Image (cartoon, rainbow, N blue to C red; front, side, top):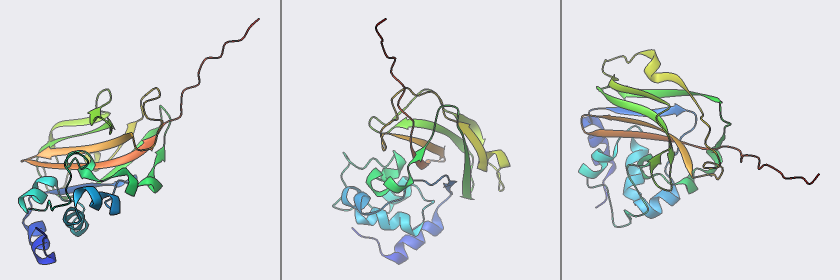
Length: 197
């Protein structure tokens, strides 16, 4: 089922909360996302890039092209790396990454930023920053919830290939899930060389 522009705008207007990372550049949907998630899903997020998957599903926004095995709505909203190869960041362990978040409609919830292995949808290590409660609980969220920094940890060789790792901002509250993903790579670790005396 495809949603009309009017239906999409109506759904956007009735939503309870919205948010997205605006810095660094995050994944956005394109042709590769449409191929596995459906054009209806892409249209939905292009109408409002701060929306969330639960609203998409309530709007019956998953069309015949939706492939659950390839489009995980709870990993970077399902946005595919192939649409985002031009936005891969290069970080080294210890680099400080400045992040900006736009909270259009706040509501109380839990949030964090983690390094996520996209091949398994698992967090590597522990969150780099987290707000265990009261995230965006006020009409004007505190500055440290919308402008903050995270430090890239030592990741070995886990994130040397583009598309395998993201910094994922995750916000959950009132049954609404928000995710923004920053693709990045880290350099390969130098192998120890053996020399004969």
